Image (cartoon, rainbow, N blue to C red; front, side, top):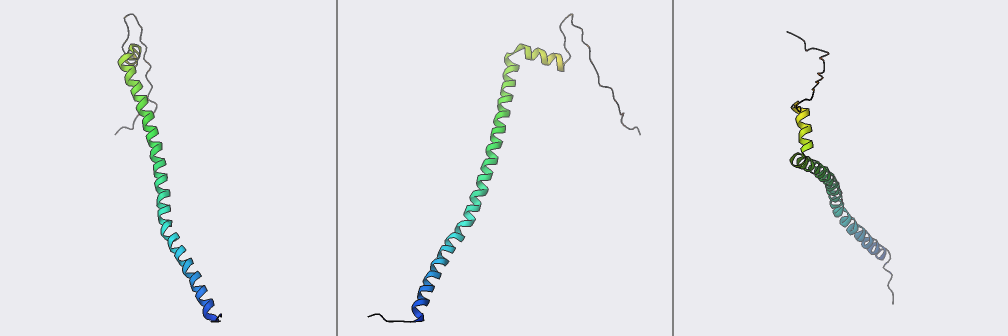
Length: 107
């Protein structure tokens, strides 16, 4: 025998569906901030990875320069000629000095 409860059966069904939707909404609502935080952290990781690659390239370049300074006499000679204006005996050194085009204003 089936008893017809009329509107109460429909209201119970509606309340159950509404409760399920609210539960799903709460679960989704609690995960949205975590997903956004995860996105921010991934972007920060990408930025830091890029920074690490740049620093590794700089470190390699500096290590190569140090190696050249320590083991390559031609590099040391070139630096001595360029920066200290050293020359070998018998060499003629000509230095070009940039002319001052706009002298600083006087007092």
